[in-house]
Image (cartoon, rainbow, N blue to C red; front, side, top):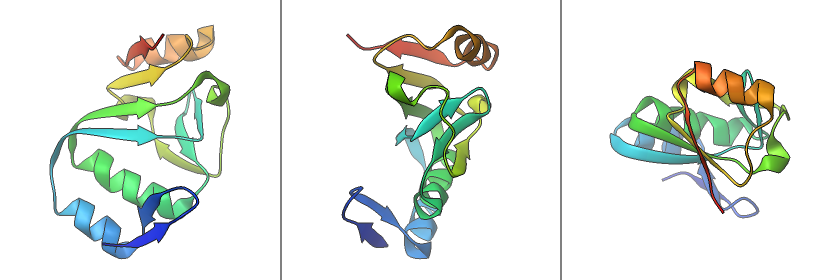
Length: 112
């Protein structure tokens, strides 16, 4: 349920949040518009509400973020580093972000 945002191919709205909140997930894969030492950020408050519901109802949070988004903050914080279990990216994060991820016990996987 929810509203489909065609440009992002995402579902948002209160119905989507309610639906996600009724379910439990072993793993959730979340994309973000930016990642800083403060956490993951997104440009859509509506998408972020759904992502928050997924994060709160998942055993493992896997963040997908390419290197172009490192050290970029966007409109809405989607998660803190402590809420992320695994980061999958295409390049190693810069040193300050890498240290913050290590302190938050986030496993970093660099895809080749």
